[in-house]
Length: 164
Image (cartoon, rainbow, N blue to C red; front, side, top):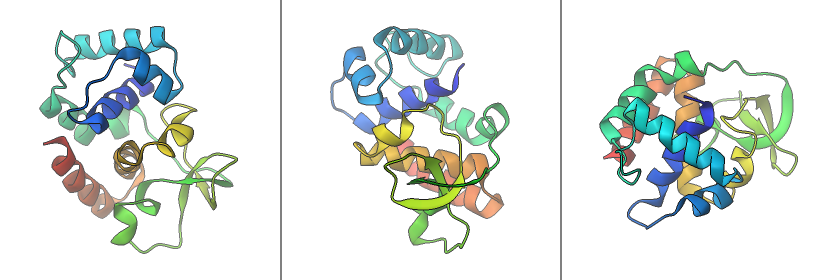
């Protein structure tokens, strides 16, 4: 698995019942079509999407995110930069968590300053500014990757609602 494999699965989840094609995913995530195709093949192999590549196996995705993501794609905040808020600094957690410590994905067109968090793919900030559902899913994922136990629990509870 590669980090952007999770990005692609979360994009499919964000689409809900909307029909999608690989070319749409590629365009909306700013990733090549061949990389989307290879990613879906890896996700089939990992048991995260059905062999028809259309039905997400949400219980497996949930298990991987809750118990594996912070070990497979760990993250430590970096320098103070301009970017797009993530983790507890972004919605939906920002409404419940007050913190002076902001986390952002580095992005020149971002509107906030905070500690840099490396996104799963360099084009995550750009794609998220165009898709609010995807943005919230990835911010919750980062709360699990970065947060303390309380933040992780809140993110997991919120993700459960969105995965089911």
